[in-house]
Length: 264
Image (tube, one colour):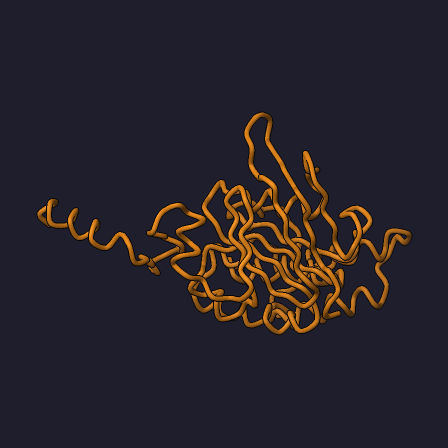
């Protein structure tokens, strides 16, 4: 797979009505990469991923997945959206959720094949959710539910896996477990994810890109203050969720001054 162009954008522009969201995006990643997209809220990360999948159409420019349009490349990529809580009260079992990933292979049959069932069982085991396979998806913890949705995406056997904030709502132990699995999967497929958890992802990703209307590609996994200043237009970046607050060099004097004036 190495050397094959997995994902390419050429001169891509996109707007919602009169509001520009992405401007002149040019990028290319190759098969086997593990790319993280970071950037401020509203910077266009999720929009860019929807363009990759063909859910949106560029105003100008071109998207290619393995050299084809997103529509022509259907079947070679899978997507896992950001999980939102309290949206999974419908009575579907975990194993049924994962089995949905095999729908494309059973379109011309009223029943799932033996291969479909075996792949589903394999994914349940890989993501350590086989013991909850017969529970309703809404009864799972955030980490278990996210692993179930990724298992569903992988049941389709894609060459490219795209994820939007895969660790959202998951505790630190669950995040580590998830990223360890993704790192292992990266041996066989290309992975692109959106994340704010910079402190966690640097250990697992191979390259990083910043998105804030424009696309800034960085060739490895290191994330420098200079890179973030360029994208966030500010030398301070609060990038991680929870209690893991990271303040980059540049605003410390200002913060200390404010602290003194506050009298705290």
